[in-house]
Length: 205
Image (cartoon, rainbow, N blue to C red; front, side, top):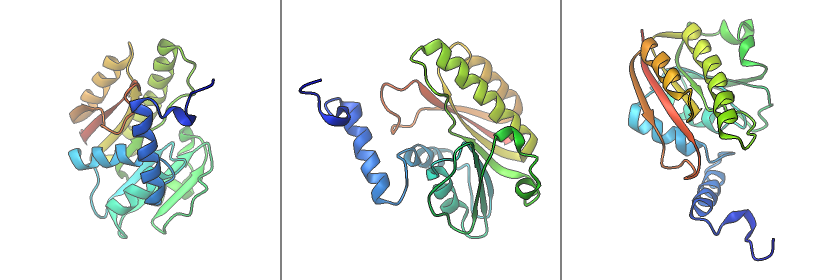
């Protein structure tokens, strides 16, 4: 379309997205999603030095890189995704290409005695239909919560992205049941038009 700027920069949300994308690249992160996790960490303190963290749907790797800095050299970050992570990773990160439902993989799970934090920034392939996309997001969130409840330590933390829709309240209720605290949070770095929001569960029961 003539007159339309590349990348949709004419929109305020587009300008913000481009700014964060450039900032992420300049700081060595492959995606702008780093700033969502940074806001969550700053507000809720879900990771500490020496912690072990599991990142579900970890590609392209921004969340793992940020988590690795938060847990330090004595901590460990593990990631799993259907897509390969192509960036260079520090020694305290291990990433495998696999389905999150195959976490029985001994080379992965047997290295830790439960995780302090399980996080998921997974999103479905969108269809443009809000109801369908929200339902698909809910299904991913249910899988992520199941993995978290099986692999988190007692008092562990859970971070999960979900699209707002009819199923949101049901998922929020499940998290409230499993954790001592449940918070709903939309980072400022989310695109303004996005329906995504984050649920943070603290203190697994």
